[in-house]
Amino acid sequence: MADSMYGGVVEMKKDFKMKVLVVGSGGREHSLCWAIAKSPKCDELFCAPGNAGIDGIAICVDIGADDIDALVGFAIDNAIDFVVVGPEAPLVDGLVDRLEEADILAFGPSAAAAALEGSKGFMKDLSAKYNIPSAEYGRFDEPEAAKEFILRHKTPIVVKADGLAAGKGVIICQNKNEAYAAVDHIMTERAFGGAGEEVIIEEFMEGEEASFFVLCDGVNAVALRSAQDHKAAFDGDEGPNTGGMGAYTPAPIVDDAMATRIMDKIITPTIKAMAAEGKPYKGVLYAGLMITSTGPKLIEFNVRFGDPECQPLMLALKSDILTALIASADGTLDKIKLKWHDEATLIVVMAANGYPGRYEIGSEIRGVEEANAMDGVFVFHAGTKAENGALLANGGRVLGITTKAKTVAQAQKLAYKAVAKIDWPEGFYRTDIGWRAAKR
Image 1 (cartoon, rainbow, N blue to C red):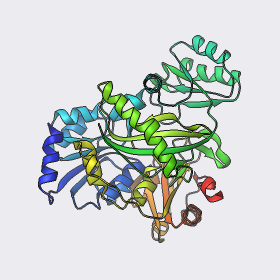
Image 2 (image 1 turned 180 degrees about the vertical axis):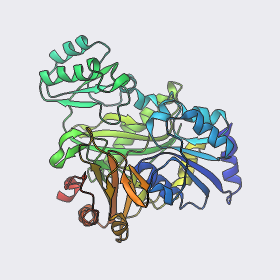
Image 3 (image 1 turned 45 degrees about the vertical axis):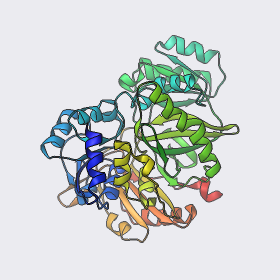
Image 4 (image 1 turned 180 degrees about the horizontal axis):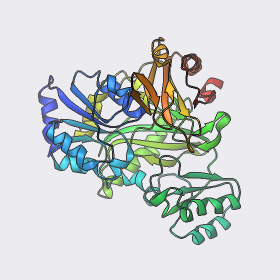
């Protein structure tokens, strides 16, 4: 098997150099490439398809992250030793399974285990079966049944598309009419395509959100540093939900005692539950949590590093990330202990005007090099391309200005100084990233 074969090679030959392929094109993948490139175990680094920022760190390959056949073929043809899968879609579609069939070690869950994100209904049913604290819910494949459930429950209430919707398939509804409209938007108007064949209706949970990440190898789990992100598009947590407009680590609300509760009540029971269901979980497990007055409750699971949380996490990590990712894939996480910088890290996302709705691509961005030259600053690219010597916007979320400083407040101040160096009239950003921690 690939995992035992490569696990043995890495363990027996400490100087073994690997050819690594990272799959994806966003800020998450840029930060992973940036961290992996520093590893003494990395000999050659490829990224498919990559972006203009990744191009300076790895060899970019023109293969889409959803082109499973081409990715597997490239890995075989180029004798890739290890594949790190960034986005959720290829994980849900079985890329790791296909790579392992080809005896190529890969970081990420199987398609069966990736159902934790691929189906919110599966996640909710698993939580209910194994007493993992989460919101009360109903699961429906008919709009009228969903509306009847809404009628019987108090508002605010949350309506979610069951499948993958790029972080946008969640609608918080303040009254019943909004909730009925959300059901129609998802199920009848098909706003999120096939992701909306089923909906989950959940009680609205009061509290403060936090992101909690662990590396898993099917049995063991190693916690990463906590984070807090900002999903709403505009200042004051107003506006539509996005894939994330900024984040910071660590999250003050997740102290050591809270981290222990999260591991005991949510993470460990989930790993045991997945093993009991015959779907052992390997890879990174990202728990979106609500810290309520009665303790942590699970909002959702993601089966990949969060974007933008991955960027400040990679900036904060002292340890060799490649060694940790390999240990997750080959079942040796019990030998891993991660070390972190003492400083806080923070990211401000710059997005194209109109995001998360319709936006234009192709506008020119200037000043990134000036921002990158500042101490404690690194600009990760999310949606960029290089053309005729110019840097152009090529997505909704485009840049992630990421900083490291003694406190979140200082990292925040540094980030906005760096943002001021960037000349991009067609972009926007929130001016209050990290406000909760800075206020504390």
